[in-house]
Amino acid sequence: MVFQHVVKHEEGELRKKLMFFLPQMSLSDLHSATLRLSIHPNNSGVLHLLHQNHLVNTLNLSTHRGEELDLFKIVGQWIEQPDSNQGLTLECASCQSIPTEATLHVVSHRRMKRQVKNRRSKCKRNYDCCLKKLKVNFKEIGWNWIYRPESFDFYYCKGKCRNDTSILSQNALIRSILRSRSIKVPRLCCAPKRTGSLRILHYTDSDPPKLVVRKLKGMVVKSCGCQ
Image (cartoon, rainbow, N blue to C red; front, top):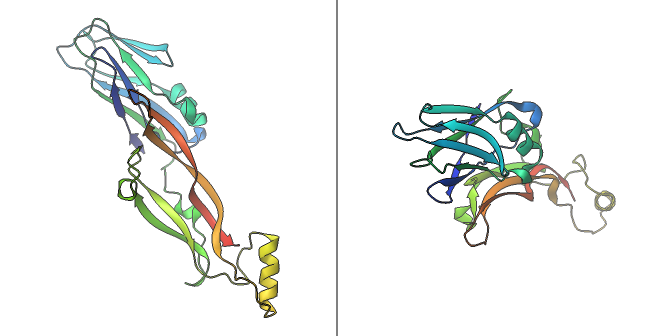
């Protein structure tokens, strides 16, 4: 599958910052990563592509009209170390303008399936404690400071806890035993068992604002149990 996530942040006519929001994947899944630039026919000059202030590639715009640049190592670094994903910089002192159309194509070895199957706690009965899914749009809940993704799959736990359900703690186990003997203690609640993080792209409070990648911990519920 090909992912085409790109956010452009201009730093002037002859220098532009490109920020990319990558899907969550492992390095072993990465097959290829290429940056595609669309260059105007009338443009000329020598374009420099930089990563963390280090020169990655140089293009003569007079002879290149469309180019694919291999970014496998850089994207691999971003996957292993998400905090290092501070984007790329295009700069050209002799260009008429910097190319405005730049897309990062990331291809995985296997189809990037939604991880619903792995996260889902299958309910044997409708009233069992299990994982439920809901699509949440950040703007609709007032989280306008998040630029990407615009929405995500929000999972939550719902259902009743029975004796054959996963127990999350020794305390919950004792309460389950006491309730089975008609001793009045609070009933067990269906709660998250395992959670994961969600990678987001958001603006900082600096002047001017900058786009940064960040992980929000505990945003995604992966499985449920009784507590």
